[in-house]
Image (cartoon, rainbow over all chains, first blue to last red; front, side, top):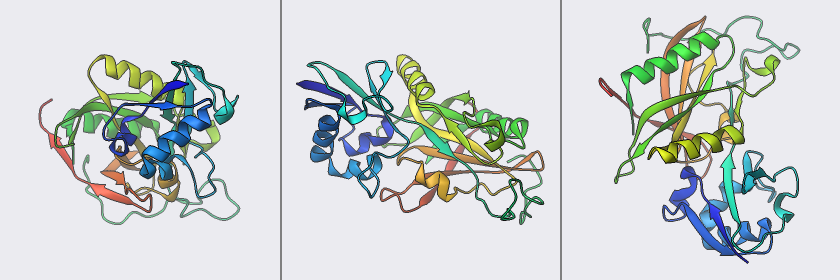
Amino acid sequence: MAVTLLIPSALRSFTDRQATVRVEANTVGEALAALTDSYPDIRRHLYDDDNALRPFVNLYLGETNIKTTGGTATPLKDGDEVTLVPSIAGGRRMRGFALDACRPASAPSVAGGTGGRP
Amino acid sequence: MIRIPRQLRGDICAEGEAAYPDECCGIMLGTVDAEGSRSVTELQPMRNARESGERYHRFRIEADDILRAERSAAGNGLEIVGFYHSHPDNPAAPSDYDREHALPWYAYVIVEVTQSRARRIRCWQLAGDRSRFLRERMHTLERE
Protein backbone atom coordinates (compact mmCIF):
# COMPACT_ATOMS: atom_id res chain seq x y z
CA MET A 1 0.00 0.00 0.00
CA ALA A 2 1.27 3.48 -0.80
CA VAL A 3 0.77 5.66 2.26
CA THR A 4 1.95 9.08 3.36
CA LEU A 5 3.62 9.99 6.63
CA LEU A 6 3.23 13.60 7.78
CA ILE A 7 6.34 14.72 9.63
CA PRO A 8 6.28 17.35 12.41
CA SER A 9 8.49 20.39 11.85
CA ALA A 10 10.94 19.26 14.54
CA LEU A 11 11.81 16.10 12.65
CA ARG A 12 11.99 17.50 9.14
CA SER A 13 15.69 18.14 9.53
CA PHE A 14 16.01 14.34 9.34
CA THR A 15 13.85 14.04 6.21
CA ASP A 16 15.63 16.63 4.06
CA ARG A 17 13.04 19.19 5.26
CA GLN A 18 10.24 17.19 3.64
CA ALA A 19 6.92 17.56 5.45
CA THR A 20 5.60 14.35 3.91
CA VAL A 21 7.25 11.03 3.16
CA ARG A 22 5.59 8.40 0.98
CA VAL A 23 6.27 4.78 1.83
CA GLU A 24 4.96 1.31 1.00
CA ALA A 25 3.47 -0.38 4.08
CA ASN A 26 0.62 -2.62 5.21
CA THR A 27 0.63 -1.45 8.82
CA VAL A 28 1.59 1.68 10.73
CA GLY A 29 4.57 -0.21 12.15
CA GLU A 30 5.77 -1.05 8.66
CA ALA A 31 5.36 2.58 7.63
CA LEU A 32 7.52 3.71 10.55
CA ALA A 33 10.09 1.04 9.74
CA ALA A 34 10.24 2.26 6.15
CA LEU A 35 10.67 5.81 7.42
CA THR A 36 13.53 4.92 9.75
CA ASP A 37 15.16 2.76 7.05
CA SER A 38 15.20 5.74 4.73
CA TYR A 39 16.16 8.26 7.42
CA PRO A 40 18.04 6.38 10.17
CA ASP A 41 18.85 9.49 12.22
CA ILE A 42 15.17 10.04 12.96
CA ARG A 43 14.94 6.73 14.81
CA ARG A 44 16.41 7.81 18.15
CA HIS A 45 13.74 10.47 18.46
CA LEU A 46 10.87 8.07 17.79
CA TYR A 47 12.10 5.02 19.71
CA ASP A 48 13.85 4.58 23.04
CA ASP A 49 16.80 2.30 23.75
CA ASP A 50 14.42 -0.66 24.19
CA ASN A 51 12.96 -0.14 20.72
CA ALA A 52 9.68 1.06 22.20
CA LEU A 53 7.93 4.03 20.69
CA ARG A 54 8.69 7.00 22.92
CA PRO A 55 5.73 7.91 25.14
CA PHE A 56 5.33 11.36 23.63
CA VAL A 57 5.10 10.13 20.03
CA ASN A 58 1.47 9.94 18.90
CA LEU A 59 0.22 8.50 15.63
CA TYR A 60 -2.90 9.75 13.89
CA LEU A 61 -4.58 7.83 11.12
CA GLY A 62 -6.69 10.53 9.59
CA GLU A 63 -8.30 12.26 12.58
CA THR A 64 -7.92 9.37 15.01
CA ASN A 65 -5.10 8.98 17.50
CA ILE A 66 -4.36 5.26 17.16
CA LYS A 67 -1.68 5.11 19.81
CA THR A 68 -3.91 3.47 22.39
CA THR A 69 -6.08 1.48 20.00
CA GLY A 70 -4.34 -0.51 17.31
CA GLY A 71 -1.03 1.28 17.64
CA THR A 72 1.66 0.21 15.23
CA ALA A 73 -0.34 -2.93 14.32
CA THR A 74 -3.06 -0.78 12.77
CA PRO A 75 -3.61 -1.87 9.17
CA LEU A 76 -3.29 0.68 6.38
CA LYS A 77 -4.97 0.97 3.05
CA ASP A 78 -3.80 2.61 -0.09
CA GLY A 79 -3.75 6.41 0.19
CA ASP A 80 -3.87 6.54 3.99
CA GLU A 81 -2.15 9.40 5.79
CA VAL A 82 -0.40 8.85 9.13
CA THR A 83 0.51 11.99 11.07
CA LEU A 84 3.26 11.93 13.69
CA VAL A 85 2.35 14.31 16.51
CA PRO A 86 4.36 14.85 19.67
CA SER A 87 2.67 15.52 22.97
CA ILE A 88 4.89 17.96 24.83
CA ALA A 89 5.65 17.50 28.49
CA GLY A 90 8.18 18.76 30.98
CA GLY A 91 8.67 20.30 34.32
CA ARG A 92 11.12 21.57 36.82
CA ARG A 93 13.86 19.68 38.61
CA MET A 94 13.03 17.81 41.77
CA ARG A 95 15.80 19.41 43.78
CA GLY A 96 14.76 20.92 47.05
CA PHE A 97 12.16 18.29 47.80
CA ALA A 98 12.13 16.30 51.00
CA LEU A 99 12.04 12.59 50.26
CA ASP A 100 8.66 12.11 51.86
CA ALA A 101 7.07 15.35 50.76
CA CYS A 102 4.91 16.11 47.77
CA ARG A 103 5.68 19.80 48.05
CA PRO A 104 8.98 21.49 48.83
CA ALA A 105 9.43 22.30 52.50
CA SER A 106 10.65 25.71 51.46
CA ALA A 107 11.35 27.39 48.20
CA PRO A 108 14.90 26.75 46.99
CA SER A 109 17.14 29.78 47.10
CA VAL A 110 17.94 31.35 43.77
CA ALA A 111 21.36 32.85 43.25
CA GLY A 112 21.56 36.28 41.74
CA GLY A 113 18.47 37.80 40.21
CA THR A 114 17.85 40.61 37.87
CA GLY A 115 15.36 42.35 40.05
CA GLY A 116 13.33 43.27 37.03
CA ARG A 117 11.17 41.73 34.43
CA PRO A 118 13.25 39.39 32.27
CA MET B 1 18.89 31.70 17.33
CA ILE B 2 15.25 32.55 17.79
CA ARG B 3 13.72 35.98 17.33
CA ILE B 4 10.85 37.01 19.55
CA PRO B 5 9.07 40.35 19.89
CA ARG B 6 9.48 41.98 23.29
CA GLN B 7 5.73 41.98 23.74
CA LEU B 8 5.50 38.20 23.35
CA ARG B 9 8.49 37.64 25.62
CA GLY B 10 6.71 39.71 28.24
CA ASP B 11 3.51 37.76 27.67
CA ILE B 12 5.30 34.50 28.50
CA CYS B 13 6.60 36.02 31.73
CA ALA B 14 3.15 37.32 32.64
CA GLU B 15 1.61 33.94 31.95
CA GLY B 16 4.15 32.27 34.21
CA GLU B 17 3.34 34.72 36.97
CA ALA B 18 -0.40 34.21 36.55
CA ALA B 19 -0.06 30.43 36.73
CA TYR B 20 2.22 30.47 39.80
CA PRO B 21 2.63 28.25 41.81
CA ASP B 22 1.66 25.97 38.92
CA GLU B 23 3.47 25.71 35.63
CA CYS B 24 2.12 27.45 32.56
CA CYS B 25 2.68 26.13 29.06
CA GLY B 26 2.05 27.10 25.49
CA ILE B 27 2.97 26.86 21.84
CA MET B 28 5.11 29.33 19.89
CA LEU B 29 4.08 29.77 16.28
CA GLY B 30 6.20 31.52 13.70
CA THR B 31 8.28 31.33 10.58
CA VAL B 32 11.58 29.81 9.53
CA ASP B 33 13.87 31.63 7.13
CA ALA B 34 16.18 30.12 4.52
CA GLU B 35 19.05 29.96 7.03
CA GLY B 36 16.90 28.05 9.49
CA SER B 37 16.45 30.91 11.95
CA ARG B 38 13.06 30.93 13.61
CA SER B 39 10.92 33.93 14.40
CA VAL B 40 8.07 33.77 16.88
CA THR B 41 5.03 35.71 15.70
CA GLU B 42 2.27 34.32 17.88
CA LEU B 43 1.76 32.53 21.17
CA GLN B 44 -0.96 30.03 21.90
CA PRO B 45 -1.36 29.53 25.65
CA MET B 46 -2.31 25.95 26.34
CA ARG B 47 -4.15 24.17 29.11
CA ASN B 48 -1.76 22.26 31.35
CA ALA B 49 -3.16 18.76 30.91
CA ARG B 50 -1.48 17.33 34.00
CA GLU B 51 -3.57 16.50 37.05
CA SER B 52 -4.16 19.54 39.27
CA GLY B 53 -1.95 18.13 42.04
CA GLU B 54 0.98 17.75 39.64
CA ARG B 55 0.88 21.09 37.87
CA TYR B 56 3.23 22.73 40.36
CA HIS B 57 6.15 20.83 38.80
CA ARG B 58 4.86 19.24 35.59
CA PHE B 59 3.06 20.23 32.43
CA ARG B 60 1.74 18.42 29.40
CA ILE B 61 0.28 19.65 26.13
CA GLU B 62 -1.92 16.99 24.57
CA ALA B 63 -1.26 15.73 21.06
CA ASP B 64 -4.80 16.70 19.99
CA ASP B 65 -4.09 20.32 20.94
CA ILE B 66 -0.76 20.30 19.12
CA LEU B 67 -2.28 18.80 15.98
CA ARG B 68 -5.03 21.42 16.04
CA ALA B 69 -2.51 24.23 16.50
CA GLU B 70 -0.27 22.91 13.75
CA ARG B 71 -3.10 22.69 11.24
CA SER B 72 -4.41 26.12 12.17
CA ALA B 73 -0.93 27.63 11.88
CA ALA B 74 -0.30 26.02 8.51
CA GLY B 75 -3.43 27.72 7.21
CA ASN B 76 -1.80 31.05 8.08
CA GLY B 77 1.61 30.18 6.66
CA LEU B 78 3.04 29.54 10.11
CA GLU B 79 4.43 26.49 11.87
CA ILE B 80 5.17 25.42 15.41
CA VAL B 81 8.67 26.69 16.16
CA GLY B 82 8.75 25.81 19.83
CA PHE B 83 7.10 25.64 23.22
CA TYR B 84 7.29 27.58 26.46
CA HIS B 85 6.64 26.75 30.06
CA SER B 86 7.46 28.06 33.51
CA HIS B 87 9.54 26.66 36.36
CA PRO B 88 8.01 27.92 39.61
CA ASP B 89 10.75 28.55 42.18
CA ASN B 90 13.28 26.77 39.97
CA PRO B 91 15.88 27.94 37.46
CA ALA B 92 15.05 28.59 33.83
CA ALA B 93 17.04 25.54 32.84
CA PRO B 94 15.72 22.25 31.46
CA SER B 95 15.31 19.29 33.77
CA ASP B 96 16.02 15.68 32.85
CA TYR B 97 12.27 15.29 32.60
CA ASP B 98 12.20 18.08 30.01
CA ARG B 99 14.96 16.35 28.05
CA GLU B 100 13.26 12.97 28.06
CA HIS B 101 10.13 14.50 26.55
CA ALA B 102 11.73 16.83 24.04
CA LEU B 103 12.42 16.83 20.33
CA PRO B 104 15.29 18.51 18.52
CA TRP B 105 14.92 21.70 16.48
CA TYR B 106 12.07 23.11 18.57
CA ALA B 107 12.91 26.11 20.75
CA TYR B 108 12.09 25.47 24.41
CA VAL B 109 11.61 28.71 26.30
CA ILE B 110 11.56 28.42 30.08
CA VAL B 111 10.72 31.24 32.46
CA GLU B 112 11.82 31.07 36.07
CA VAL B 113 9.11 32.37 38.38
CA THR B 114 10.23 32.95 41.93
CA GLN B 115 7.64 33.86 44.54
CA SER B 116 5.13 34.91 41.88
CA ARG B 117 7.59 37.03 39.94
CA ALA B 118 9.25 36.16 36.63
CA ARG B 119 13.00 36.38 37.13
CA ARG B 120 14.74 34.93 34.11
CA ILE B 121 13.79 33.64 30.73
CA ARG B 122 16.00 31.36 28.68
CA CYS B 123 15.76 29.43 25.45
CA TRP B 124 17.08 25.92 24.86
CA GLN B 125 17.32 23.37 22.10
CA LEU B 126 17.74 19.61 22.44
CA ALA B 127 21.06 18.28 21.11
CA GLY B 128 20.72 15.94 18.15
CA ASP B 129 21.94 12.98 20.20
CA ARG B 130 19.37 13.75 22.94
CA SER B 131 22.16 13.87 25.53
CA ARG B 132 21.57 17.45 26.69
CA PHE B 133 19.99 20.79 26.02
CA LEU B 134 21.99 23.54 24.37
CA ARG B 135 21.42 27.17 25.19
CA GLU B 136 19.88 29.07 22.30
CA ARG B 137 20.17 32.80 21.91
CA MET B 138 16.94 34.79 22.10
CA HIS B 139 17.02 37.91 20.01
CA THR B 140 14.37 40.27 21.32
CA LEU B 141 12.69 42.40 18.69
CA GLU B 142 11.50 45.79 19.89
CA ARG B 143 8.64 45.77 17.41
CA GLU B 144 6.65 42.96 15.85
